[in-house]
Amino acid sequence: MSTEFAINYELAYRVKLFQRENHINVNEFAQRCGLADEVIENVINEITVSIEQIWKICDYLLAVSYTHLRAHETRRHL
Image (cartoon, rainbow, N blue to C red):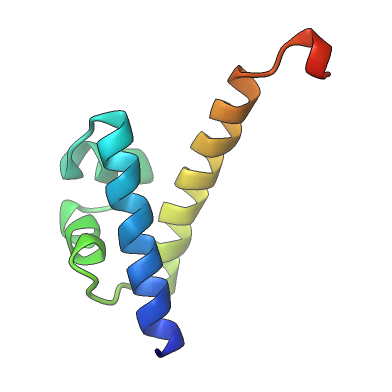
């Protein structure tokens, strides 16, 4: 499996999972990432997108994951 294919597959999986868990559509996800709908549709369909677009999506997913993690912390965890 090529690295490019593996990245496209993993990113598509993560985007689909995030959309399903958060009940958002392609348009809303694209807006949150600051990208065009077509970019997210390409990701979902495992069509190669630019590295800059990949970073924007990853940055958004990581920020949301970190915020979600912090929301579950209590004073006991700190």
